[in-house]
Amino acid sequence: MSKVALKKEKWTLSFDPKLKEAVKREAKAMGIYPVNFLEELVREKINPYGHTDVKNSVKYVRELRRKSKDAADDKFLEEIRKWKK
Image (cartoon, rainbow, N blue to C red; front, top):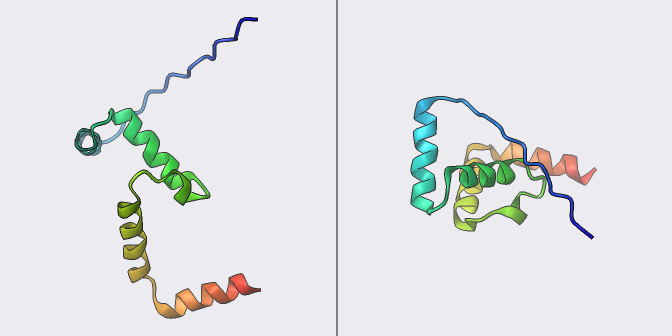
């Protein structure tokens, strides 16, 4: 039996040239194609179980810690109380 070939969708994205250069620079530093870098970035940000697809766990944890520093303790405790209910 022959397998049906999947059709790949072609997308064209246009965005700020400075952002494009930043994406290319990061991809080059990681040694991957810019498209792969964008795919990983989207997977990490949109995945409801964000920790499962994280490639660079150290960077991910640092980012979480930075975000938690910005949040006040009272707000954090209030969020915990909401989840307890």
